[in-house]
Amino acid sequence: MKATGIVRRIDELGRVVIPKEIRRTQRIRQGDTLEIYTAADGEVIFKKYSPLVELGQISAIYTDVLAKSLGCTVLVCDRTCITAASGTGKGDMMGREISTEVEHLLSGRTVYTAPDNSAKRLHLFERGERLILCAAPIVAHGDIEGGVLLPGTARDPAPRPDTVQVLATAANFLSRWMEE
Image 1 (cartoon, rainbow, N blue to C red):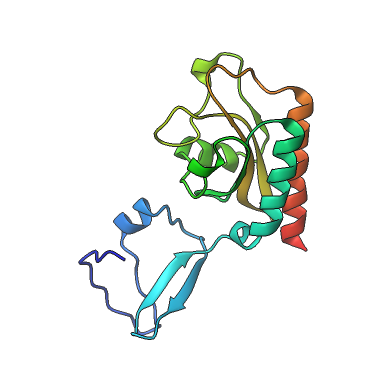
Image 2: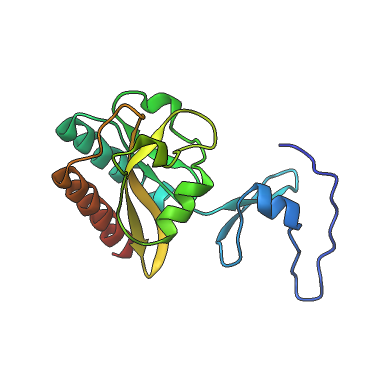
């Protein structure tokens, strides 16, 4: 854990303000849910809560089945990072933060298919060559919780319509699972 040097008082209602700079760097927005942890030494830790992390085993199994069926890498992300990955290169993607482009894309609530022109494709991460070939948002209780992603490179063709439908179905399944 890293000290920020910022000190805040708790107000009369028990509230504490998280500074704008910390909210920006940690991608914490108004309405986000934070989980509170305590340690024996008196530490209080706020962590962004992700219901998709709670679905860890289900998401991992689903991405594994999809990756084997489609013959490519499949990812599940929450609103900020990869929570499940299966297929080639999964190890270097697990836990990484998605790009703000992908975050914005998912907030549009529609399935995205990459254009044939690879120069117009969106980057999966802020740094690196991985691009998004397809993204299907996971919407539970009316909120965007994340997405099912098909990563690729500039050399990869745009996904076929049946592949896009499979990813959309996976996102719908995970959405429904979260609502139950």
